[in-house]
Length: 422
Image (cartoon, rainbow, N blue to C red; front, side, top):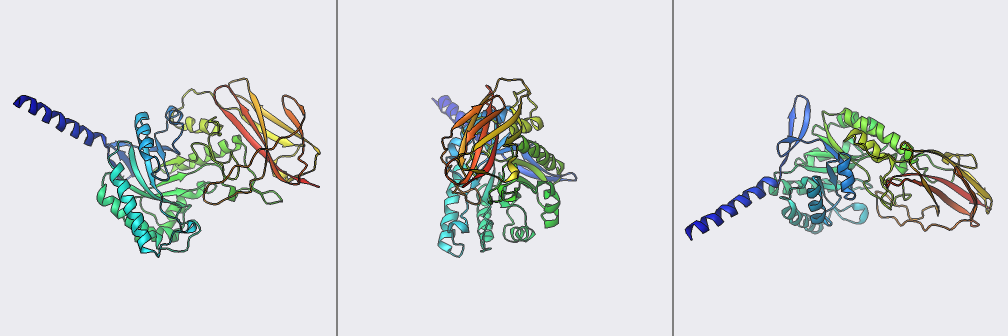
């Protein structure tokens, strides 16, 4: 009997110790070469994606981490990521002033930090946890600088409860004034997360000019944002094709990799599908889960696996004009769309077309947008490289989308905005 109890005591001690060992520790070290992230004692450069879908695909192309914006469904996300060998930068959704959060309301601030305390206690020992991200773009359209005191208090609370994982806060671009406030009010913030798109090439120099002296990460990056893209004469943003996005993503990632002194990794945006301006602007996948050429770009940097490549759309025209031409068409007139497509693997391709009115539910900062309902259209003729349709009878702004699919769940996308006039 005595032996039995000793055996049980041994098992309890063993598994308690094992749990401690697998819970993981992330730390930041500094050397003459710069900053480095260590996970369980090993160097860990973040090849990450923003989102929690298609983890098998992420793993297959060499991705090692995902980023969330909140703790919604966190247990399921953490468990699946751990099963796939992927770490998680777990976000804490700090209230935004533009959404009505009042940083002069001490009760609201206290309630927020207490709710986060429960989340930290719940997930701090999960083996998939890499770090905490306190807030995302709380600086977007804000006026009350007390938000940084709140972020600082949250970070201090996390540090006291969980010394094993670094703490990051994420800003919209980089502003020297904000960097100063973060340094003043948030001394427990270990990493500055920066969401940037068109300005990626200047980011490393901007970080240094701002005076930030800790490591940083590029927490969102991808194609040019809709706010920094060219527009039509009626004021809608012109979206790049999936090929143009992939080409820019390559340039962007090369810029990220150049700064190994301060930058400890990045999260590509968006690993999934999202309606924002259009259904195809930011997602590396379509709504049906088909991967775009940008996934191939990430693979070329990370795993270099022998995956089947997405189709490539070289151009897309309406009546011989491209998307930047501010094309106007009379009601019910013929619209001839032509396209040139290439596939590196010589796969057989299928084509899908969609006509939508221009979105009337455009928001800022990634807030939820409703996808416009597709419109039925009359096809006049169709060939291997063209489709001719009748323009809508109702005046207004529209977009015509093309999706080129292969049998390996890859896709190329493009759209042309046009205006129907009387």
